[in-house]
Image (cartoon, rainbow, N blue to C red):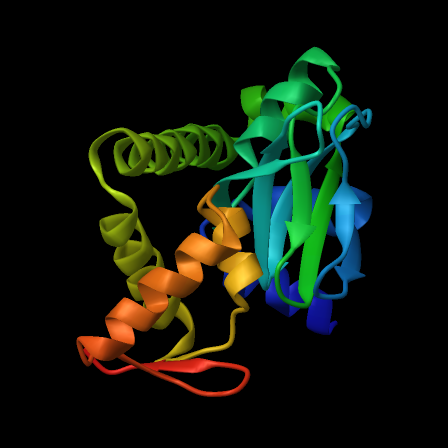
Length: 209
């Protein structure tokens, strides 16, 4: 099956027996770009693995303002969902499908068994925690030690590395992810254009620096 091949390719290195259990108990679902499939306060009963696409995770304050934490890509797990699942807690984050996304969910009751039975799963969980910890450190570093000009440049460079030089993001989307205002982002983008770093078009801009 295509899904089986996809799982083996995106999540390599697991024991054959573990793959069999993934195929038997895992559920593959698709989310369209822009879909919020986990809200803060939702009960999470499955580990979430991303097979295709990009999922963005946000915190949200009492007024509904979103704060971008990090994104997870194909072959990665949501470490916060791992923690929530293990302790049977409610979700502390909102998960948004940034692109069309395919995910694999694994029931909570298998976690203890897999951790004890499969070394590859144990190491995968440890790597997931470490990767997400590094992502959060990077986010904190941007907020604490960089001004908004630097944060915006870093944000665009990261987008370009993933998707190419044509940046199809609205000013509002960028301001949401950087916890800024649309006016500030628009002003900084115009400054970048004046400096010859970008070329702004009607619904996108090109990174040319």
